[in-house]
Amino acid sequence: MWAEGTVEGTYSRKSLKSKSWDRAAALARSIEDTATSETTPKDEPITIIQAVTEYLADAKARELADATLYKLEIQLRKQFLTWCRAEGYKLLKEFDLRAAQSFRASWTDGGLAKKKKQERLTGFFWFCIRAGWLTANPTDRLGRISVTQAPTDYFTRDEYEKLLDATFLYREGRGETIGGNNGTRIRALIMLMRWSGLRIRDAVTLERTRLINDNLLLYQAKTGTPVYVPLPPQVADALRTLPDGVKPNPRYFFWSGNGLPKSAVADWQRSFRRVFKLAGLEKPDGSAKRCFPHMLRDTFAVEMLLAGVPIDQVSMLLGHASVKITEKHYSPWVKARQDQLAASVRNAWGSLGVIPPQPPKRGKAKLVLMRA
Image 1 (cartoon, rainbow, N blue to C red):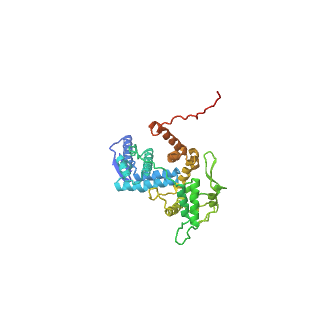
Image 2 (cartoon, rainbow, N blue to C red; image 1 turned 90 degrees about the vertical axis):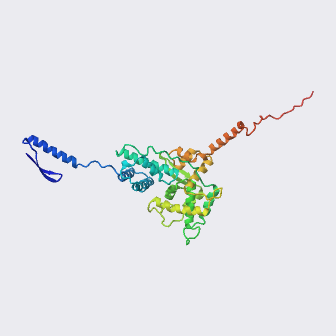
């Protein structure tokens, strides 16, 4: 008997060398199964580009914050993929511990930024494991990055006054009057951040409706209770009388409402850099003091703690998810803790012989005269 038909799109006529119908049918099915198994594509190994693309798509689907998505995009697509192409890594399974060590060695960031990068890279490979593309995480055996937490810097009262003074000399171009509307607006923003503790993005996108009399609505707590911070009268007045910007929006104090908030923040950061340059703040050794807008938020927190405000209340005003976050950044400035440390040191002086023990105080001697 003969079998006739198409195999992989090609006409075929083949003798089955059998007179039995059942035998011939079985042989025909065997030929079909063999052809099908040969043409079925095997699972191709996942490439690094495919893995990164799917991971970023998943991160977006999880509705992560725009800032987080931006950092993932920069690190994985622009840095990680570029490095892998340069080093010849194409398949995901090729990236091992040695590759991870080499990639990390190419980072030129500071300690904290490196630590965050390693955490994001580790998270990416855990995603790959959950997807079934890998069985082990190549970053698992990477050594931990040691980060020395620098003391939180802030503006002293004199430095803060110098910043305000600099705004009266501020202008954005030679054709602009010194100390004009732009100077007034940056001065109001500086005052707002100093006395509210808002981050620059929250301050730039602040809505006018959140200023109620002299109280500023910071955020809505998880319990539904609004959290307010009172503003000094001069700060609240500066906001209420704020001159319009180039593209005013009645909804916001400092933002036109057009474009992305991060673009508006970038514009204001440039203005801050001009103010910092005009102020010319210096360290005690005479070197220039590095200044950042976030230091105004730090100034709010530090001054509150130095005034004896409990750290849990400061944490609530800052909007921290946990008081541990506040302690991590500001514990050296807790006044009560500083007082306790100072008292402990003084108590230790006696046992160390620094101050000789003082004899107990005696009451004054009194003589009573009596007649004989």
